[in-house]
Image (cartoon, rainbow, N blue to C red; front, side):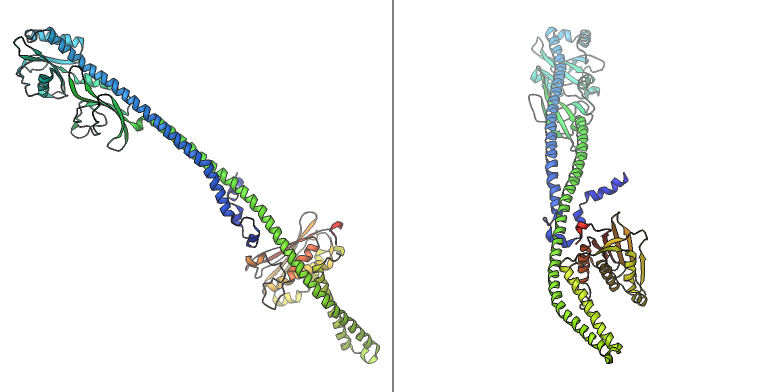
Length: 586
């Protein structure tokens, strides 16, 4: 599991972000893989997530609109039912009083015993009545039946009495009056035989009305109450009672039918308001029925569901984003790898063309040099023969030594020109068994004196288990010699040279030559095998050594690589086959 987690960042992070092979940039098909990668992720994200988000938002809007519409209808229906109940409650009692005054005359109603009997019958028949009284046209209470001592009270200045005079019946607001207890007065006007009027008044129990309203309350988030047309509360409100017992939400506009609307409370929270202006068939009233529901409470189930949907949507979006990112990274990485291989092939082809060009140049130079060298060689041989014939020169060792030096120099020049020709055309590879350890030792022996003089430590580690390899002795010796020479030129006094060999599978040998010298910068590392490229000072190198070495390794069907960091040293690794197959021999 830990391995998978450790590999995950590498899988997500594209390889081209770690690409430092600037020399390959001109050969890439796409020049900006970062932009390609980013645009791929962006387009796929938009294609996958935008429709999902848009459809979710549309779904939310439709659901919320549907819930709001249904909630308004339910609130309006509830207000309508409560309105009918309150209206019936008041009309029933007004009708009872109207029936009473029509059936009984003034003389009967002013009889205290008879009035008490009427009150008792009304309580049994309808309920919700506290007392009953007869009031003369002067506003003075004539007869009273009930639990309070209110005989002789003057009601001429009471609003309900004046309204009853005008409309023949009235329903008062809830007030305390003489008894200091909240109550509602319902009254009807009737005529005496002498032409004067009197009023039959009944006091209704507000508790009975409050219970009737409470029976229509639905849930803890709802409130139902009565206010007058100035917004003064007539029955208790659980949530919306403000200063001076006024309702703390806006008073709705008048309507002759039940209405429902959306609004906000004093805290800015959305609410649903159902309201109805209450009027009875017998007398008008100042009551407004209010049904108020908190939208958040009503929509709690939907909000919880929406929260779960949001979580699901968020997790799904994250998963989609991860899958898109991983898929885009893998696809772009594959394109990048293919493009990189093509670029490397193009660079290799260009390098081969360069090598071919310098090879043709070297071949021409070698041919031109070989002609005078042959003449010098033949002339020096002829001079040597003459000197050895004559006795006065035969015994002169210095003269013979100088002639031999000329001949040796000519042979060495011939070897160099043959190498230049080999750079341009293929020579036959002279196969023979080679002991790699002995060959390395022979090359190192050439530099022992210099190593001792410069205090350079040379460490050779070639196991005895390394088998004899069948290859060309001269070419392999030249390869090792060139790499060791390069190492000695790159290291300072007191440094070290490490030569190691190991098997790379059953059919290949890997030879590494490592030093801790000045190293090669990253900008130059990819050019070290190019002809005429050198990091040495002017006049100290031609830039052909590693190019020739590269060509020799290729002729032996091997491979050479280099690793280096500035100030930390350089390692050349040569991989050669243990035995070159016959069909590959040249």
